[in-house]
Amino acid sequence: MTNPLAPLSALPEVVVVGEALIDVVHTGTGVTEHPGGSPANVAYGLARLGVSTGFLTSIGIDGRGFAISSHLSGAGVHILPGSQSAVATSSATATLTEDGTASYSFDLVWELPPVAPTYLPRLLHAGSIASFLAPGAASVKSLLQHCAGTSTVTYDPNIRPELLGSHHEARTIFEDLVPLTDVVKLSDEDAAWLYPRNSPEEAARKILGLGTDLVVVTRGSEGSFLLTAETEISVPSVETAVADTIGAGDAYMAALILGLLTRGGEGLAPPVLEQVARMASMAAAITVGRPGADLPAAAEVQASLVS
Image (cartoon, rainbow, N blue to C red; front, top):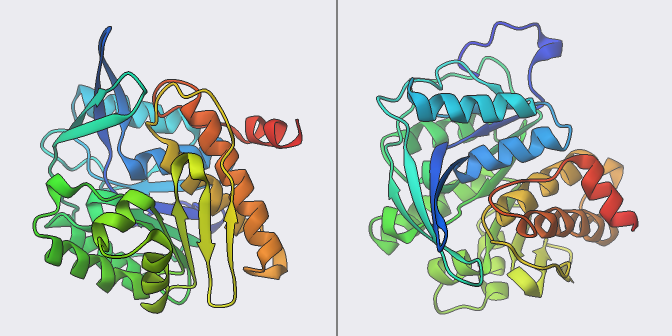
């Protein structure tokens, strides 16, 4: 996207659009910095799973921006033209509790240069702060509009209340984007924030009614809930010792996308959904078992599934 000049055979199968930033992680033992941001993690996770992935973002030409681009490129992510356009690279400060749960504060600016798709990827993934925060959110919506109906479109709102303004405004943005998608994945915490009067299952039904084909709600140790117009299933999580929860939802999302790309001709039939969710749950379990957003490679996921 944004004028790629490579031959068509070399264009990424999947394009991810959204924020990339540096996670500044505070623990009881000190402070570390890691490349992060939910869409960046998804792009990284997809490349690690062997999916040809392009990433459209906004980072600066600075040390932190170089760290992000090196991290992603090292996994095989193609950072798309126009992505190194920010004055400075954004950051998120994560504070970890003793049980590994992370809370966040942000120093984030989200703006994309004018972008016009010159090809339509097989799948477009968008998500997180980038879909809400002006002025870049308008560019994200425009990309979804271009791809809807041709590319498979996946969306993870990854709600960060402190960055979203009013609840009404954020929910309106979210509900305007859902009809442009084929799959919406969100956590039970996201669902509770968007629809505080509803259970996660009720929220999923509301979201499905807005016009998407599949809603996936992740529920941490309680597994995930998948809903289509024809079926609903629950898939348990994979038990593991938790180092921290950073990147767990993004690992699930990346593996979910891989499952959608490789599902064959059975569409969203219950056996397909169960298989895809099992793989996504395994990817999340591997990620929470080690520090930071260290998303697994395909071989790790496959080995764990058959062990």
